[in-house]
Structure formats: structure tokens, C-alpha cells
Length: 446
Ligand code: NOJ
Image (cartoon, rainbow, N blue to C red; front, side, top):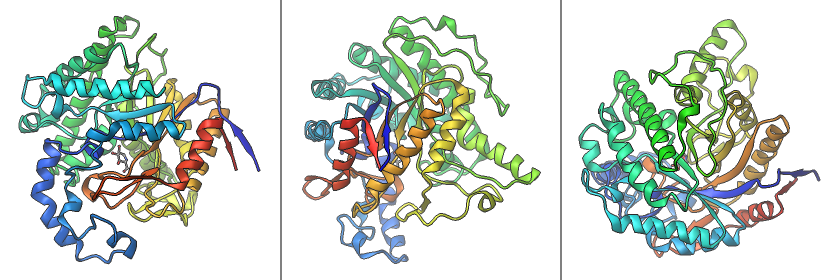
């Protein structure tokens, strides 16, 4: 048995997002879900599903599967959820605020919903759990989507106005903010290039425009949040908003922040390439757009990097020559699992010279057969990266609860805690207890 001790003050926790767990949201996603659920359920009939998925509620053949609906009902049950997180020895928790609740109509801010999130933060702090808040996790208010969402040149202005309202209300309670979740690594591609998510566009120019506006929105909100906490971002060099086209960035000093840190969470995959000149060039360009675009373009306007790591990506030619086919697949998502990839990706992020939180890492495993092993194998490589000088400050498993997995609906079960979507009962999975032991001892033993 080997013992891997993590640094003192390393944070341990889990993550969720509003639309995936709260229930009863009214945003661009909920609109899209109700329009598409029937078609999706019909299409699902063309596929052969394993029995364990068909016996779940809801199952892929039912329309309910594709409608977030009550989700986990966490809007009402967050105290129960945080009791579980506390019991599992977690000391940090990442969740998101739903913009459409806070600003349901343009310019009209809902104080009652703001109070709800103030209560959520208090509930975490009462349990000794530090809140890490994501301000945007894939969903938009309907009015904002109708204005073109992040295609709109004024989108940074709308987003910053919402962020200022939220941050002013929570600044004494919260010190860790994430502006955008997987905005340019997943969202813009799924929604504007591949046509998979609302608004289902397939236009490369729109994709570029959305990416650019999101970078602008991030930088504006970063500065606005710093100002609210009375930090002048003056020590940062003035910065051209135009995304950088270089593959490398020059690391500069981290922005000083005494009680607030503002970061970005992006999904980085490990994208091995072959060794020929042509394969390596494609590899570098792909890797830049897949993993580094936002972090390069927004540099140096973030205090930490949130890394969401899940899988190996085979899009670069020649990848099998450098990393052979793995036996380990996350069937529900069709992802190839490669724990060492987290070490590669962390190494790649080192050049930005910012601290890193693993803001997501997890597996869909409804029978809980491999989750424990998944967590441990990834943690082993996180530990290795720390020994190699990468400043990793915490690990947040995705997700605390089974939840609504976007276009897949409720099929993939990522939770440390199983949720019965009929009666909303929570059941802690055995792997969660193993993870709880690691959190408590700040040590991994395998
Ligand atoms: C990343 C996303 O942030 C989250 O919403 C999603 O559920 C997980 N990955 C799993 O796909």
C-alpha cells in the first residue's frame, strides 16, 4: 500500500450546478427541453439500452427524462444536501447561481431569490463548508437568449450587471467566484458549432463571436468583482480584449487579492497526438482551442484556474501511437477514461502560474462499481502533479448528487449520492464513504 499525503489546507469537496439540481427553473434550457423531449424519447427507441438504465426512473424512453422539471428538488432540499456533504467530511462546495431566478426580466432583480442564495451560503458556512460560486453554468434567462445571448455585442454589459448585483449581496460571505463554467471549451461549441444544445446553431462565425464576447464578459466581471471588494486591479497590465492567437502566453504575476479570488472553470481533456510534424502541429492547434483558448485570451484576469477533467480525447491524428486504446470507458457518456491525463493537463496549466482547483472530476456509474477506483486513480495523478510543482489547492468531485445531465437527461448518474427522482430520497453510495475517508485524512492510500 502506498500513502499519498496531500498538502495542509488542501480543500476537499464536490460540485453541482443550479439547473441540474434545483428544479423549477425557467430559462432557455427549460424552454428547449419542453420543445424537444418528445423527439428525444422517440429517437431513444432506436437504440438498445442496458436493463439497469431502463429500470431507472426516468428512463430514456420517457419524455420526463429530457425535462429537468423538479430535478433533485435541491432548491427546497439544500439543507439536507449540505448535511450529507458535511457528513462526508467535505470542506468546500461549488454550486451555481441561476441568472434567470435573479433577473427573470431584463433589469428587474428579484430580492427574494437573492435571499434564497444568501440562505444557501449561510447553510454551507454553518456546516463549516466554504462556498465556491459559479455565476454562469450553461443557462441563460429567456430575455437574454431572445436578445441573442452571447452573440449580442452588449452581452458583457448585461452579464456584468447581473454579476454586480449578486456579488454586492454576497461579498461578506463568499471569497471564491467562478465567472463562467466551460463556456468556450464546451458551451460555445455545443450551442453554436455542433448544434447540440440551445440555440442549436452551426455557424463558425457565431462560435467565434460568442467566444469573444464571453472573454470580454469575463474580463469586465473580473474587474467589477475586484472593485466591489475594493481591490484595484491596477497591478494588472492594461489588456487588449482581442483573443490572443499565440500558442504560448508569457506568465505574469498573479493578481493580488486578499479576500476574494475570481477564476474560470474550463473543461480540459488530454489530447494526445502522433509524433510526425503534421500530427504535432494539428495537436498544438487543437489543444489550444480545446484547452487553452479562454485561459490565454483572458490572461492575466483570473486569480485561479478551475480544471474540469474527465477524459481522453482522440480527435488529433496519431493519438493511438502515443497512447494505446484504454479498456476503461464511461459507457453512459462514451468517454475513454485515462487518469494519467489529469497529470498531463495539470502540467500544461503550470505555465499560467495561477493556483488550480480541480473543480470537476467524476464518473457516471449508477451501480457504483468503479467510482471509488476512478477517484483514487485520478487523485494519485493529482498528487504526482503537486510533487512536480503544480499548485493544486483542492479537489471537488462531480457531483454531490445524481442530476440532470443536459441533453442526456437523467441517464448518467454521477452522484456520490444516489437520488430517487420520484420521491427525491437521497442515498449515500459506498464510494462516497471511501472518498469521505480521503477527505478526512487528507491522504490517499492505495
Ligand atoms: C461538466 C459540466 O460542467 C457539468 O454540468 C456536467 O454535468 C459534467 N461536466 C458531466 O458531464
